[in-house]
Length: 330
Image (cartoon, rainbow, N blue to C red; front, side):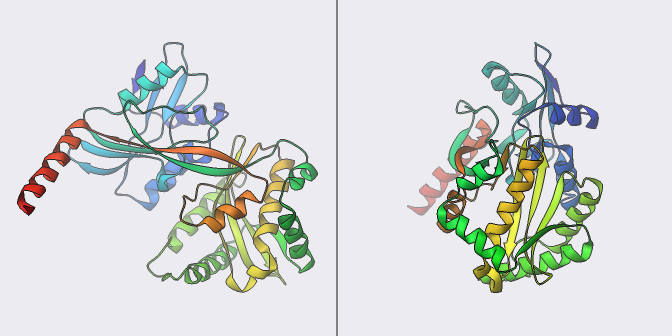
């Protein structure tokens, strides 16, 4: 197994374009955006060439550094990470790649499993915590996929259309600002302070900038009523996968079933463009209402494991500190 401790952008783009389970989060673009938003991070991504000539990339961010020591994350905002490859990898290949990536100077590594990739078993090196994502399979025509929605959601979609909800793609900075205003309203509905909670405007302005360069990859869908933006979804598109990365609905317009119309029309468009998955992104177990909403849109539960590696020396140090604290507290 050949380890490439640094990889050229061309190598990474090649693998991302030739891996049918790669997501947007596995592209150099997501890494570039992360480094712009967090200049204190560093690119620690590595590449591999297997004995059979398969090219692979493991996207990594060094989020904490102390001299040669570093703590790694795959990928930014703890979105889907892990290895992508331009061919089939054996279990032995994958195990070896993660062993090589967890070098002596790596104090820890976290990665969220990619639900559409071959399942990982990293339990020999990593601790795993189970999560899930809800994904709508785009494996039939629109009427069939729509027919899998719960009856309540199909009726909600029709109600939203009757009440004047329209959906379109936006391309101007002013539209992004309007969407950000809806997001701030949503944060207040959650009982949080928009000035201290969630994402700042600078992230959305940066996403807007990238969307101008990559309009087929980054899209902001908005819902309007009487021309006013009342909600939206930022979708990332790559290979066969569409993910709803960020979304919000204005409080005053929840009763118009805006979110159902929005998701339905994004699904309709993704089907027409030949995508295979519409992914709602993991939400954890913190909001069962959101999970229930996703279930009723004809989605399938995909297991997603959160894997965490900790260097043996770090584990020993933690155990010693815990022992000392117990002795002091007696």
